[in-house]
Length: 216
Image (cartoon, rainbow, N blue to C red; front, side, top):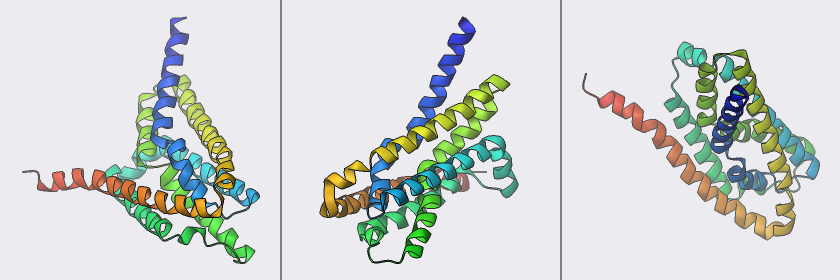
């Protein structure tokens, strides 16, 4: 009984940490604004590819993330800086309403747009961001049994499914807002994303500068 209770507690801890770091409720408005001019089928395809990209990324880093970081000499802080730059560029485009100009574009160009945004920035680093990736690496190292590893992978899959449901369920909001409302939300979310980008950037830059300036 105690063992079952302990596993339930660990499962809840794993889920809470991933759900908080991924924050699908917070990123849903960004997803909606970036796909507001797409058809329902294309929006669904974008959400599926973004979530699948994030799932594969988190699984890869859970299995060998620390080894990859060590092999390439990459730190989590460097990852945060890169993510911040990507976020800032995306936010700037959103602020200038460039992401909603999909009308009268040939179908093959819309397909390329879907392929582009579903991998980055939606899949990486919006869903599978530095925090979620670091969390998967740390929890994998802490999971010292097959059962705990199974719980970790199950938690990642469950969180990704929940993210997909939230993204697809939120598409009704675009219909309610209409074209003008979507443009306003696009600009507003662009500004918010740029602020998040600055936080990402300096959260990574701060520790790197402290290491450089620290006395030997």
